[in-house]
Structure formats: C-alpha cells, structure tokens
Amino acid sequence: MLYPSVDSLQEKIESKYTLVTIAAKRAREIQEEDNKLLSSYKTKKDVGKALEEITAGVLTKKATDASVVYEDEI
Image (cartoon, rainbow, N blue to C red; front, side, top):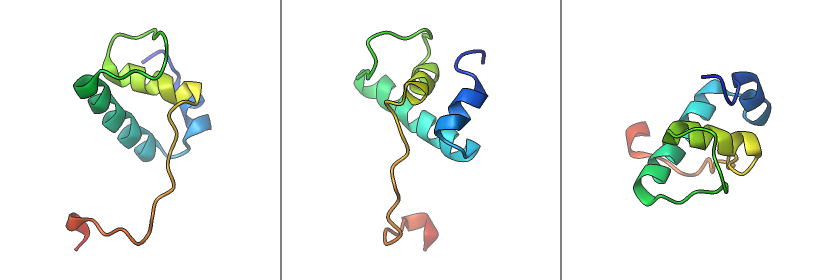
C-alpha cells in the first residue's frame, strides 16, 4: 500500500488494530451502500477509499461507551 502511508494514518488513529477495524467496517459500508464521503478518490478498492477518508479527517474514531456489553464478552 503506497497511499495513504501508514505513518499518515497513524497520525489520525494511533492504534493499528483500531485503524484496521475502522477501515474494514467503512469499506463494507462503502461496498454495500455505495455512499462516499469524498468527492474523488485515488484508489479504486473500497479499503483504500476508507483509508483515504481517514487521512482526509472525514472518518474518525468514535468514543466508546463502557456500559455497552457485546454478546461475545459475556
């Protein structure tokens, strides 16, 4: 992956795990709903588009709610 660089992505989201999770969820959303947040993209693949959105600052990490318990945590 040449663009966006991992360094520029980690300036926006420090954790690589969180970065991958957000990008994967957003890529699935782009694929299923075809809603784009940027006017143009350099990459053709959905994961690349999600990473470009993170680099542009359009897609960010949300604060998590500690009171939410997921089924796999029980």
